[in-house]
Amino acid sequence: MSKNIVILVSGRGSNMRKIVEAAIPGARIAAVISNRPTAEGLTWAEERGIATAALDHRNFDSRDAFDAELAKLIDSHAPDLVVLAGFMRILTPGFVNHYQGRLINVHPSLLPAFTGLNTHQRAIDEGVKLAGCTIHFVTAELDHGPIIAQAAVPVLEDDTAERLAERVLQEEHELYPLAVRWFVENRLTIDGHRVHVSPAHA
Ligand code: GAR
Image (cartoon, rainbow, N blue to C red; front, side, top):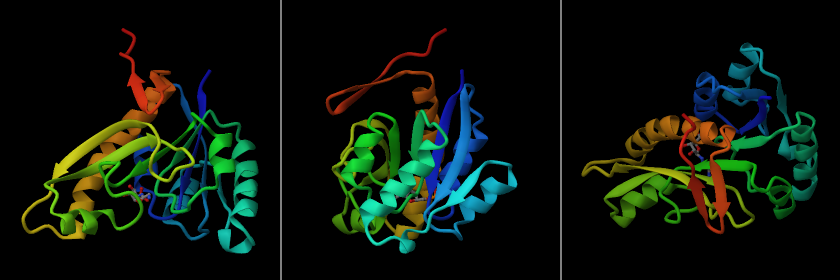
């Protein structure tokens, strides 16, 4: 039986597109949901016949109220996996705990370095020689969940945040569909803060 995947986006949705285009055997993209009704990613998904929905966070009085409604919407698609793909909202512990072990995120830095925003400029300013991206399970502590996969790119002498972001994004596009594939193939085991990836079955 295939696994239902719900993808949350806030904007461009290029990672979401790569996951959809990967056409992972055993995965069904059940819905793409955004907190921003004008998100480009929503239009792209809709044009491909994927169920979409927008839930504008500005219509809610509190984070709890928004997250409760969002969870209801997501759960109406019976998800096995919820994928945050450029979903730019901090989620409440109640929401995160509800999806424990089935909620993953892409973050544009080599965690645990540079949690939060403006990761590329901060990496340049700190003078690090390697930047990159991280795919991780989401826990209540922001950007600190068990790490599934990482990819590194060199920080170049004349890098700008935009150029570095672009090169890191290319890595995200390779790594995120791969991590989703591992999940769908039941190859991920969370062990404390570590994630073990078991070999593919022949
Ligand atoms: C990606 O670079 C992703 O790593 C980042 O937003 C971008 C979304 O691009 N996510 C975060 O910063 C999460 N804190 P996309 O909409 O084209 O996938």
